[in-house]
Length: 103
Image 1 (tube, rainbow, N blue to C red):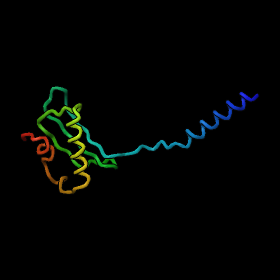
Image 2: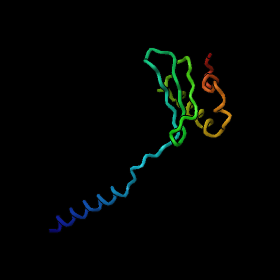
Image 3: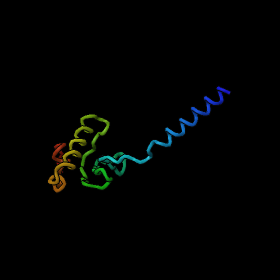
Image 4: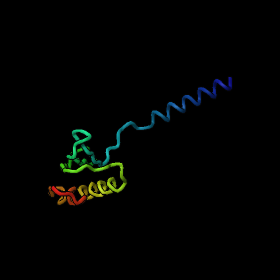
């Protein structure tokens, strides 16, 4: 009897705590790199704000290796700049200048 009551109590507490957790997605600013195919050297980098709205996109004639931490940090810095400084959004070559790419 005590084991049944204890088991029932634990199951009830488990349901209550899992019900209390929110399933809402936390939107956060992010960047996405799109490539037509793996061999293509042309990539489109898109930056999105907290509301998943496109704030900037640029097509570059280079292939960024996003597995490198240096590239990820650079893209995150650009994203922060785009979110805080409106003038960056008006510039057409933010990525090319940041990565010193020829356009």
